Length: 164
Image (cartoon, rainbow, N blue to C red):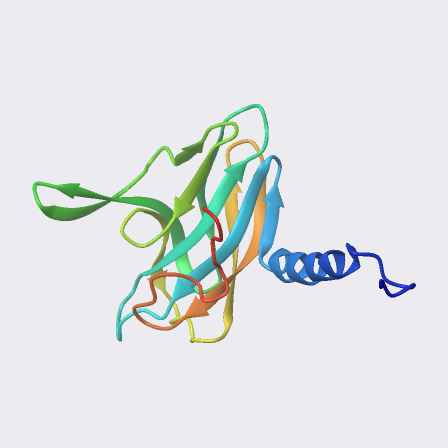
């Protein structure tokens, strides 16, 4: 017998609201680009650089391009790519930025595309957040916060892909 005040979908709706609220805490939008779960990690001692990671999804009909950004903790932010070349990992700046085509999702992650906090003024502290601005060719600037994970982290502890 069903409880008279509860419909079968009410628990699913309540759960969806709780989980979507948690997900929205680290999602940002710049024009047609959705920025999901930005994070960085504590750099090695005395390092002057740190990587920044996130997922970018272009929900629009025109391509956009991540050009770079800024942060109070760094002299500048560049867009970089890691590639395997002859058995060696090589990193290079993408001087024209990173294109995100319409409908495309690009994951910025360790060992792949990422942003680079250059000339660190202070290292990110585990458990805190780092403020920053990303700049897109069409969408323009958007302010975000990066969750700071421990040294050596491979992904953000709060960012999980289910069913992908």
